[in-house]
Length: 319
Image (cartoon, rainbow, N blue to C red; front, side):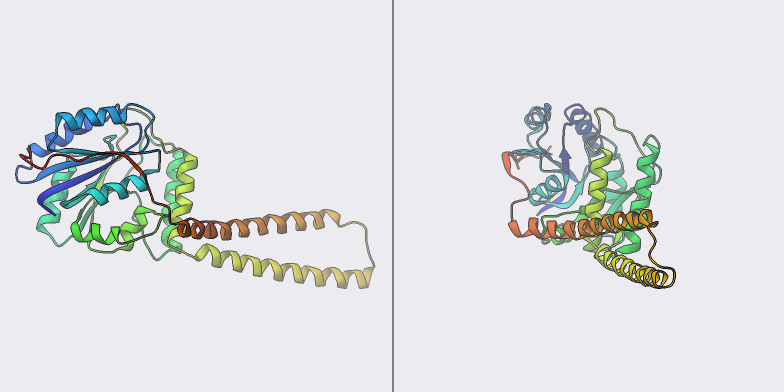
């Protein structure tokens, strides 16, 4: 472990246009933290632009400060964070995005809090979503409320991955062997004392986000089923309720037929029942299938990522 060092893990996907500005901001923060060394671990997550070339140039320009890891393909942000954590050796480890939506200057207060208080983690959360599509904001709010309703692992609304953690917290996170990783949930699951700092939403400085609505929706579903089996229980209850309703309706049809005789009319209601039941069964099978799929992925034991290129910064003469 490197004393008085903050290892900053930075997952990067198509961030060639923002990396130079990001590093400049980190250097500005370094000037205000003379007793602490900030090292950067840039993780190229299979970018399709010149991100890797920019990383190489930055590592050459700052050989004592910047390391980079480059994946063989795009494995996702979760894999990028894990790779960074596994290569981080600082007394404290931070994770932040390169698009400057995570204000680097907040590192000053975050470091001050984690060194002068009993907090093991100083994290951040957005208190506004200005500049974000309203539909995305609505679904994000609904996700946090639903997660905290059905899961024992609570997640602060607006929580970001941007945080600084002590070495014991990082070791706890690395001790979790699962392949289906949802870091916001894992950060909460390991516990420890957490302090949240709030800030308003900041738009990207350049480039476009790689998180489409579909990707965010899939990510939210992964988060919901990673830390709760309530969807399975709910599917069972819905199935039981539907069966009872179908049984009651069947008894009603038999009695009506015995009293009034068989009637040709009624096929619309029958069609609605068949279609409704079929849709409900598919929904429940889909929920079960998601859990089975996660078991399938875990059992294959494939690595979370494959490194194609690794450059670790020099240890001498930190500057």
